[in-house]
Amino acid sequence: MQVQVTGGFFPQTRPKEADQALSGGFSGTLRIAPVPWLTLQGRYCAADAATGGGFSQGISTSAIIRLDSDTTGFRWSVVPTFGWSTNQSFELEGKGASLILAAWLPATDMWQPYVGFGPAYGWSPSSNDSDVGRNGWAAILNIGTHCNIVGNLSVVGELSTVYQVNLFDGIAHIIFSPILGVAYAF
Image (cartoon, rainbow, N blue to C red; front, top):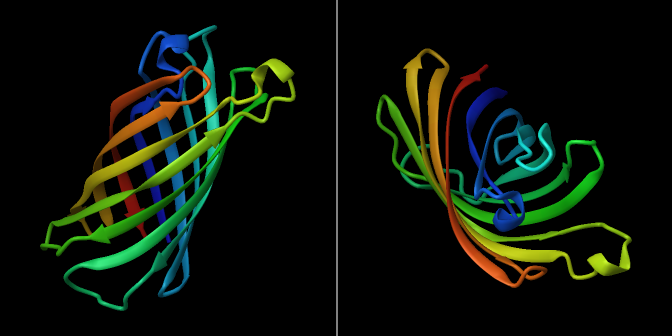
């Protein structure tokens, strides 16, 4: 099991509408590995809603599926994720899915670097006819590392690069989203 808490900046799906490309926020993640080749993950995040004040929130579920059985060197996984987001009034605002190919690079005594890349798709579940077509897609690149501090406690740093195409607004953006946090494995 692993518990992780991070703070940082999360990308907006509609930067022009929100008057900002990034929102400050935090996330909490719980991971459990019932078998060596599978880790299940749940995440909660909240970020500055920008327009109207308050916080937008989201939850996501992921499965980290190992593609190899190596314990050293490069280790490969595929990570399907599904998430839901709400606005500051806790109304369902969006859904999304991604499929990331992840690699854990060779570790040192202190550092465990990783990288991931893959597509994502998001949409609004709105039933309003004027909102038909509120969707978009993205390419995501994550680069990060765990830095072992002591025992099972580590500091986590990650930079996500998101190239997103908002089909509703007809706009594309590249957004760099950094986070920093702590993780504890037990």
